[in-house]
Length: 115
Length: 114
Image (cartoon, rainbow over all chains, first blue to last red; front, top):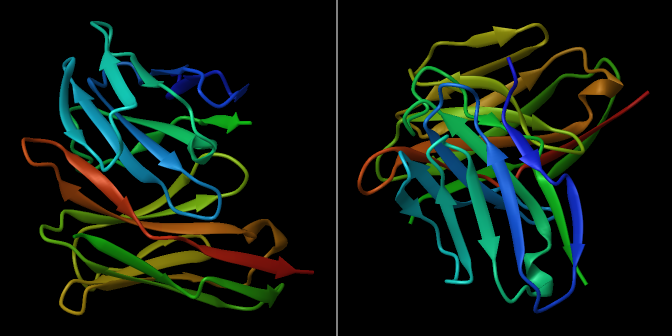
């Protein structure tokens, strides 16, 4: 079975640009969560989506947005990139948004560098 | 505000040593505590703990949770150079409507020297 897949794995953007990151959950999982991990820190929660609805949002500016598609894949969009947006972006999937008896399955992440 | 604090920030040991990592938390509504190992990429899952006093083991790694004192420890015995990594502790807490999120600590960087 394929795990959580994220694309691209790496990308470099210039300040002020826009970026779209993609995540495909494990088959059968209906919930996707996004996390940002800045170098030297633990991951920070950005969004959770379940059945195409936003369930929760972390303390991030409106430049960050996301959506979930009918096939449960998800996109994270960041507008007007700042140098501080440089980070590893992680996607996790779960059956219904509750970790329960299973671990949160993370994808391999997208490493975004803003120059 | 929910908080997870890990200590020490980093440590250096030699192969064969035992390592104890600490994680304390202050959260409004605890669901579970998870430990992850992170090398260069995404965190890989180690343990999920929900009940106090029950040790979970996997090979040379073990972990236990104390819900009264609000902390967990992760032990690594007979360390090997492959154990060098950042170890992350996360607490699962509910979102306002439904579903849960993970609140992470800052991690402990472990370096095992040959």
